[in-house]
Image (cartoon, rainbow, N blue to C red):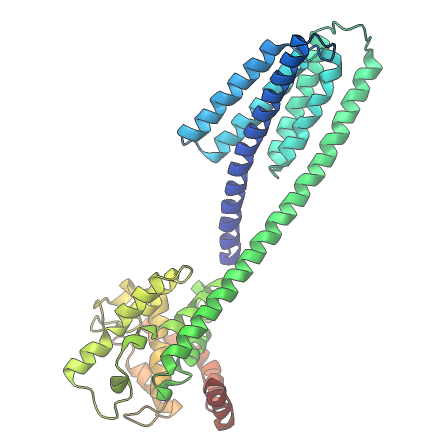
Length: 404
């Protein structure tokens, strides 16, 4: 499935489930309050012998008992939200039929119009059509199967008009359903956009904090992310924009663990001692721990943790090899190495692009995934473009000025 659509559908499902759960509880609560009030004022009418109601209090009490049982089931029995929804809608049909018999027949038929209105609140076409149809059948059945005891005479024209009104209400309720679905989609798109914007801001803040410690690596994270995306575009596994965005964020944060590294080690102009190198190597594990603690960045762990693993298993921190190394980490390993070779560091000058590509080819099967060889060859024009744009002296000066 298309990755953006899959993520959107998952978020949509969660929002709808939360909405349905709250709606189920609200319908039961409101119905219970209404029945309690009905019981109360009918008792008052009977007590003072007021001719304002023909309701059967025993029927109202039965409805209240049923609603109370449903409420207790929801509260103490962890049934699924979908099952609860059907229980609620069936209880609505039961309550409406009971009110018809318990509230004086003819004048109570309009209660059935509540069924399509309530079902439309869930925003699901199947529920709306099924329970609206069930409500219509129930209305016709109770009217034709149980004669009206009132003096008001109802003929077939009256029944057909009621059915027509019911269909009209159901139709407008269905329009309400479509509007709810539009709101769902709008809310999901807003949430996704907000999450992406927030994550981008968090990532940029991390990069600023990290690269402030070592101006020799200024822009390194951005370039690695660009090289990684350019390489990934040549692979069938990365033909979805969402996956490319994910890889881009991994590239931006691949060295985030260096925030915890001593600055004198990062800027040291001579070779590192074995002890110092072991300290530097911990930046992958530290970085993975950092992104795990940020909601929305947990999925970047593989790229951050494994980008220094080698195809032959001689890398760090886990010594993973071949396909046991996540693909995004194998891509980042190439991008990271290429940018490191073509950038000036405190301890050496940059290599030429030609020499960097030669060393990448030489490292196939040992340091790098040999399956990426063709993709690297196809991505060469894009690599050259990124290198050229990022090594423009004027552009670099402007970026550095903005950074400072």
